[in-house]
Image (cartoon, rainbow, N blue to C red; front, side, top):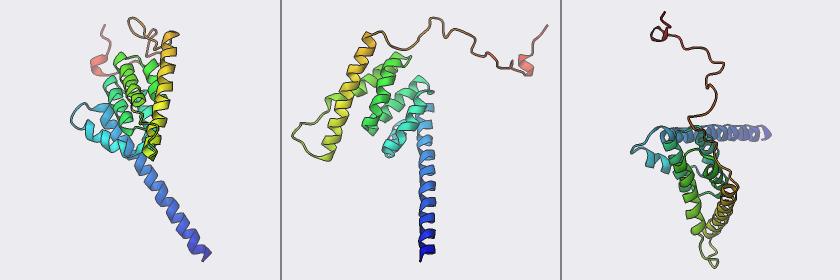
Length: 182
């Protein structure tokens, strides 16, 4: 009997691990669409990504650091669609420090919508409680953004691009079309 139970537990663990791995791959597939495309595939990918809920937030945050500006806007839209208050610190960070003003504005706009969407205090449904908590966190984030901006915090933007040589230590490119000619 104990051996059968041990086998059952082992199988359940394997199924859970494979489902989790599959979920992470599926999330990354949707993120790839959001970061690499700007067409009719984006809205359905956003909706599919929203079905993963909170599980998608860490991968979205990672992608926000490396995506092109349009991709970051799509990822911010996905965070809004998720509607999870765990996205508030991410939106707060990018609202202050992203180098592109349109990305900063998109983050601030999501936080403003969330802070304004608080249901009445008399509502006692679970979704109302979640919305109230998200609204409170969004208002706190808006206040923090205002403080940081007033203190002069923001993205490091250099006139003429980032200083220094971006390929320091990298080998020179090779190839017939790139060979140095005398």
